[in-house]
Length: 93
Image 1 (cartoon, rainbow, N blue to C red):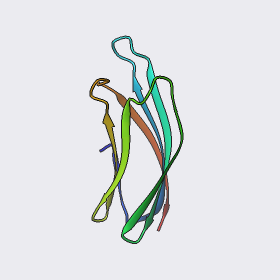
Image 2: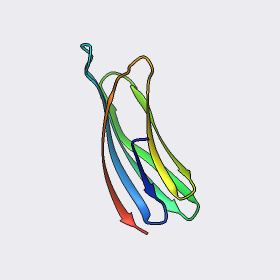
Image 3: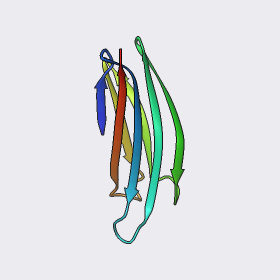
Image 4: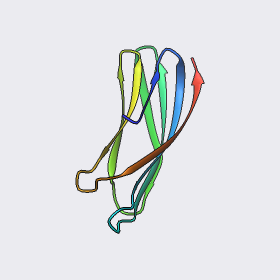
């Protein structure tokens, strides 16, 4: 889990996520944007603007447990280690 937020406080959160693998001579990059909409007990996620230079180096998922919405990045086991950076903006409920 790289970030989480309280679903009772935020109505919409937008993430910009970058994943990189630059060790051991690798030069792999992946970037994407996600918008998360909180609607009562449900969340809706739209992923767009995805770009990479050498295939998928990890997966990004959004989940909700109780009032906590979590953004998780899981690296491809063959690609580890990776560096993940993100920016988040949100609109309050």
